[in-house]
Length: 404
Image (cartoon, rainbow, N blue to C red; front, side):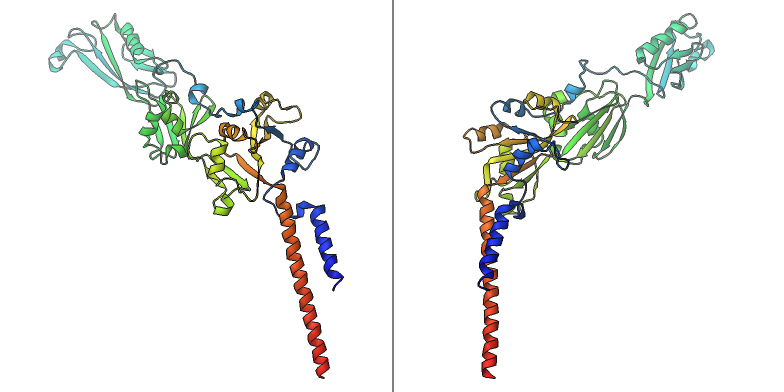
């Protein structure tokens, strides 16, 4: 047993130094991240990624919040859309004449009327886009405003009725509608009013959002294009509260912007969860580290702070990354920040986090040696206890034999 004890210690020490991957860890080591950034493209098992240092040369591109806006994606200089009649709309039509005895107000019936006019049955715009008016025939109505339709009817009746005047109003609206769906209190299909309505007005008519604006996204679908914006941004920026057009689809969903924090952070000490909410529209890296409890002073390497995300190819090209080796336009990217550098904290204060980012803080290299020493110490204690137990058993056996 005397020879076995040193042999076991030597074996454990050799294994620990020869392969640190056997030691427990919360994630990749900083050296592996830097090595695989270039070697990963040749390895069939690894996902190739770009490694970008956050520096004075790159922070200008990374300090701008990646905010998609309605006003940027749906530019419209008009104060409001012109409301036109469409197929399926139902119109009320009233025809006035200047004197009794005309085409629509016969003389013998004039005394029984409150005025020289007649209300026609409600007319629905047919599939051809027309309505039918007696003595005027088919009148094109689809894609025309109500004043234009009125003028068209008057022109048809001018030579038949006595100085005709026509008043048309909307009875039922089926073409200029907007669907408001998702996490609103009363989802449904809403008709647009004649003066035009903005995005927040339609959400309000649908009962308002079920959840807080910072936790809700608004997706606007128009002409096959979809844009998704945080509701709090629409509330706080009047330019984002754009006019809604007929047949738009508004979808409100609850999804709080979050990031995942892993590695040598105090959140593990405090028992916090790894998925952390922004709670604000934009979040910097320093704020994210603070929300995760800060760096663990006994474990973290403050020079190796990493942020994982998928980045668009054009941005990486602006950052000076060679993107020719990547196949897809959404490129796996790891940003590295060195907080040991006095300017690192300023760079981190400008770096903008995005929803679904992964913040990872690597362990200091000395932590692996602490783990190894702990493993050796525990193994030594185990071997020592085992040796003592065996010695005690042998001593007991000898004592029993001597008494016999």
